[in-house]
Length: 295
Image 1 (cartoon, rainbow, N blue to C red):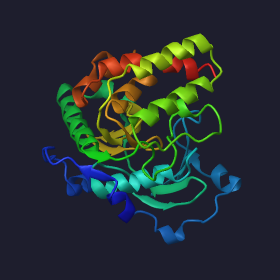
Image 2: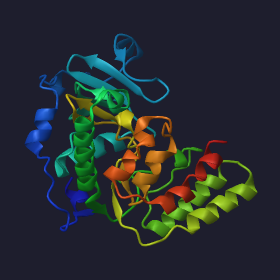
Image 3: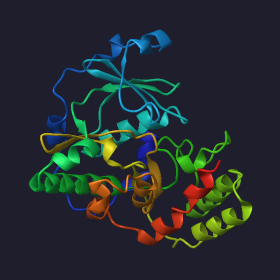
């Protein structure tokens, strides 16, 4: 982490958050985590068959390893998610599951947090609980985005791990600045093989995005299913696979890319309550989906 410390800085003007490390730790499940020394070095198919899969197989490979531990297979940058989780826990008070062990193949052992995904819980929460969660999430994102970086890419300086860059095996990023990032997006979109005329139109939209935005620490997939709640409080934010340093509009835009627009979370415009809206950038970037989803 010594090298990473030189690549970011906390914005001094950011108001101190009410969430502390102590309260974040209290919000985590009180179960005793499995010692890392007792976790296996090699993951086998037979081992996974004996584990309970968590969530949809289409959205990720996550298993309940034991009563205290979750096992996840991350990718395509195998070390990026574990690095991001450790980084966020070290430099913020955001409730993130503790990484117990990780390897170069993308397997991550982390502590199990007892909570319900917010997309399932939201409609059963009363107005006071909803407001409390909105306030808590606003604080978490404010703290996250107060950490700025000097490059664009995953926290461990590996590739940009995002659906927009997953069209082929060629690595994309990290990028030195926003201009290089835009060129990388254009290269990735052209490699998708979609209609070339429409692709060039969309690249023109990207070029029209205002420049000079801050590069900030970003979750990259901030949707309700990745927020765990219990007793009306956020107890963990999970799925840091696409986290990294990105232009400050990226979080807001990406939170809309695959959203369920029929869910009350979207109908009530909760995203506009918990982070700064970048509506112009959102409108322009949404067009990229038609390109990379056709691949």
